[in-house]
Image 1 (cartoon, rainbow, N blue to C red):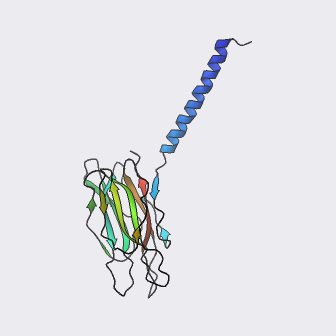
Image 2 (tube, rainbow, N blue to C red):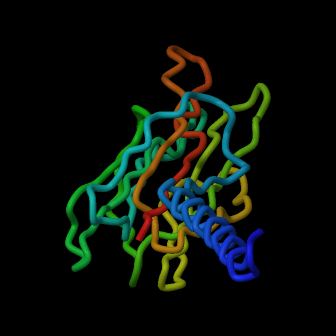
Length: 200
């Protein structure tokens, strides 16, 4: 038969195997970029592609493309979000945007006083029925340094809950934009956004 030490060895091997497979699982988990989202986004439009910062860069600031108030005209408010991707020395390398609506003008960059964009909160007007819909109006980001920075969007609707936080900061953006409805139909442009977390 088998002596005691042989059995002990077998037990140890089993433990090692279990530990090893857990390790693999953990590494597997991390290789997926996490995406943060909010649950109050508008319901119209189509999700664009995730536009990602170049390797080794992360977003330390953002710009918004906003259509000013139209008075009796058709308001779309927020039309686009651009991330300012910086290298470790905080030099601007590239701006990334995903899908952008056709109206409005781009703001200058809202920079984190220190660190990177980490979490966000979206100001959204709920469906107005027959009224003028604008969907997403403005956005706030929390920076890894703890500060909160807000864009220059309009003030229709309300802010919802904060998204989860990206430990190392944000490095990609994806937006849901309703294409132009043509003529006198009600346009909402940007409705919702998601952001990708950097892996380090």
